[in-house]
Length: 489
Image (cartoon, rainbow, N blue to C red; front, side):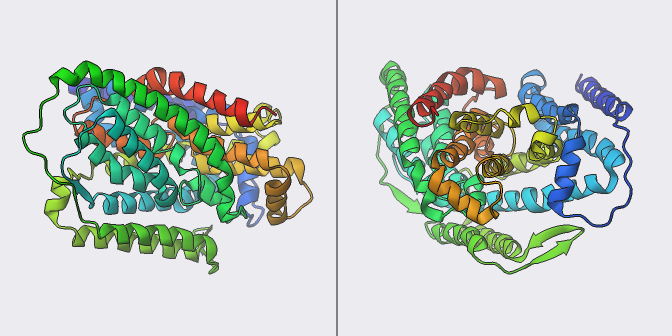
């Protein structure tokens, strides 16, 4: 039976590949000499048809449906499914656009995917070596307090660092609880997404803004926005957790002996600090760049990635094996993210190129109608729920700069945007950060938290289940509240 399913899936992918090959655009290019990366992206994005995002939609549907329809197949072959969708895009893309396509693929892997995975791996490894030992009882008050702590930490150690540091203690504190899916979901909402709003260290789009001239502490402008939505969500969580706790209270076992709270592997904080310092260093140190296969790589970014790898390896070799075993540490969550996002980053290339083409691309009807602050908030956030939020942020940052300060140099325009059109930059920043919580793929820690929860016996909702049961009914009203308070126009 399993072999038949594999054959069926293979035939399905083959059919899609043949379909794309049959409908390749008729394009040919004359050799025009070397071009700037921005020129290539804009030129390519203006010619890509909207249906070129089909493989991206396909991999999203695979992530959503395969765990429900073919759970055993998905568990053993999700990496192959990701690779299949990547090839479905890459093969016709390269045949049609030749060198330009190769450049775009190399660019997204060298500039985005590899640093992305290195950072996640480093934070995952270092945070996984810190074991909070002792008896913590997951009452509504304790759970809310842990969410508050995680929300505050996320802006200073990144969503991945804060999520990996706290998700296991949260799960252990609630191991006796029957209903705990909501605890993990609100953890994703607050710690893995919304909490990272206050500094460029919190989330890649804010760091990208910092690299383009947004002042490091400018993001403190988002304190009111983060405060409103965090208080709203924490209040809902506390009430929901209190209701469930009261229903289960009679069946909660009594603790025979309470173990004092103790932290093992605390020296991993030094490695986390080294990783965060490396990220900050890459934003302030300018060391030139090198050319690798036509892609411009900044030396400071290469040094950053090497430092992160060293920090991760030191954490792995210094931390006793027993500590990681007690912490239920495994490599599966980072492996799942690496395999799936390798396919996502490949298939996302046409969507990002079309967006960057602005009014010249197939999504011009969206770009041309983004005018008010709430437009920027919802379109940046909506796309960040499914696309990489860093380039989405940059796309609409550039849209705002071109609209309000078309004749200025970028740095001057960014400073003018901060000073005179603050609400627009707030809308773009909040949308990119907050709405990553809408889906499992909106932010990489979402996937990792879900995977760790499932390893610990929590039956997490499916891709669509998460959206229909939690993010749409809970997050969308909270985003409407933020819109009414801050972005009405």
